[in-house]
Length: 328
Image 1 (cartoon, one colour):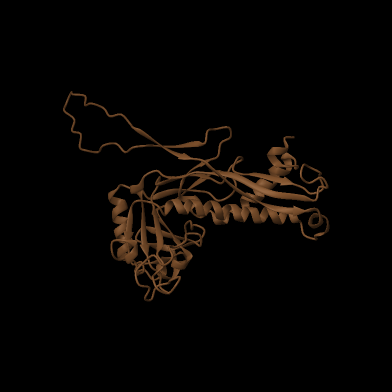
Image 2 (cartoon, helix red, strand yellow):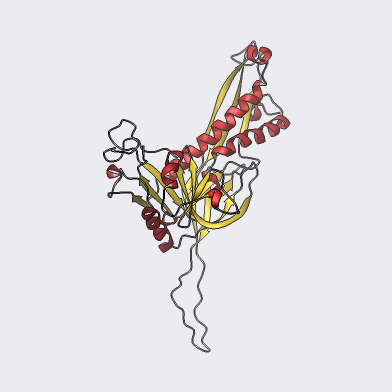
């Protein structure tokens, strides 16, 4: 067994730990449902390619009797993203392993799963926050924002997405360790911070999930307004003190308003390596008790995880960011 792959645990043990780690990561991966996802492949380059066909020209093409018109050729665009490695580890001593009453390895894998999910989601949301299609609740720049979201703001963003021919999301990446997708009712999706939930519920025309009357509900979904389904995550952090005078808005220092991003997504707007599949993550465990270089008495061990990430906009016009304050 190659000790550099899993440490001093067997591949069978590693195969058991991977799904456990992914299971505890999944609740944090809210945005992963709405991306064009690719599972990590082994023995590939550090560049990953996302491909899509460009829409055909729909200028009216009148046909003359007996004359075959010139045909069109489909064009495919490739968007590349750089794979980057992320991970972390926890230390473990022989005393803890020998004397602690809890299943320490299980607890550490759980902690690593939660950490990995939160870390990967923070990275992905950070990229989403950098989109070029931006709207502001008031003013024309972030430094002026000190107003909450309204239905008029939602309508403006939906109008923009519709004019760009952004399709409503009809499929989502399923939760769980395996890479699968499922169909959902067509709608744009808006990701927002959990601080925004109160303001979203006050939107004119808002429909709560409890009033849907059936159908699929996304995990952490709040409700819908104007063909947009709102889904909340505590990891979609605001820009502290980045707006106008705080007034009645939430503020880190009480002087300027914190500015919250609302990220609207259409189908095929964003691509990511998803945290799913057999190659998603590599657990590395060194059990204490085994003498090794630098630790001749085998007093120390560790539990670690490592994976790769890549996130990229596939079409900036099929996503939009609304920046708003949140009522204190």
